[in-house]
Image 1 (cartoon, one colour):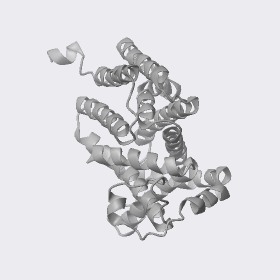
Image 2 (cartoon, rainbow, N blue to C red; image 1 turned 90 degrees about the vertical axis):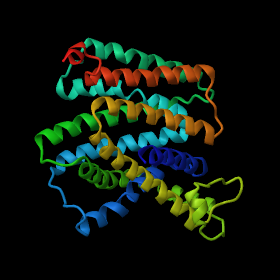
Image 3 (cartoon, rainbow, N blue to C red; image 1 turned 60 degrees about the horizontal axis):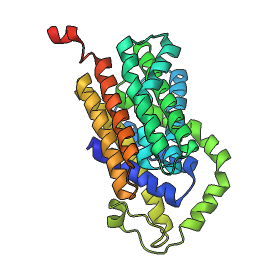
Amino acid sequence: AWYVLNVQYNLYNKKILNAYDFPYTTALIQLGSGLLYIIPKYALGFAKWPSFSSSNISLLSFFHGGGHYATVMSLGAGSVAFANVVKAGEPLCSVLMGFLFNGAIPALMELIALLPIIAGVMIASMAEPEFSMFAFGCAMLSNFLFAARGTYAKICMEKGPKMSGADLFAMNTIFAFVLMAPITFVMEGQSAITGFEQLTTGKAPLDYMALINGELDVKKGKPSPSYFIAYQLVCGLYYYFYNEMAFMVLDLLDPVGQAVGNTVKRVVIIVAGTIVFNKPLTTNGIIGSSVAIGGVLLYSLVKSGALSSKKKQS
């Protein structure tokens, strides 16, 4: 389910951005879609409202919202496969954030394990037929912001009120929506409304089967306003639930299982993106992607201690 939700989000998101070139608005709608689930969940008593530090959550939500916006902009400017290969470089950013926040210096083996990630991203970037520095820059920015979010989240959970991963993500979503809304209105505002009116000139009634199948091809016909709004909301719910599912799944796995799970997830997204959008990777692109993703797995295993000789002996 985690893989399905993640892949669906990436595919829906890319189709939206191909038709509607307003990444700030798209990203805000995706954050806001989560509120359709969060508000009833807590208001109706399905979950208890958590206690938290507003100042801590605000900073955490800035990292979360900024990272999400950067990811959406990267996916809009480049291919799904390329964006996900670059995002495989997040462990490198996590090491840097760990040093900045905690002064943590990684072990030598961890630093060595980062080398194939760096090499793979460089090879894949040079091999990308439609290379975009903007897409690369946004993907790297999202890496830094998400790495900062992960590092700071650990600090908050250790020193602040106890919160589950699902509660923390819910509060992050609410605060990020509030923080990013003014930025979105300043950056796109009226132009996003005009773009929506120009795109949604279709008159067909809402087709639920087409919505479930992820159909959005403006070359075949413009969508109706109701269909495009529903499409955006479905994409946003995929985004929210895949993240919440990730917290649930990763909590059930040991560090090795998490490493393998995250690596396979990235491979599945890259393969799905190349098939759906008919943009196959070049030979060097395949090599670079394989090296980078293999490096992520190696780093995760080293970080978890799975390859430690002491652990094996015990």
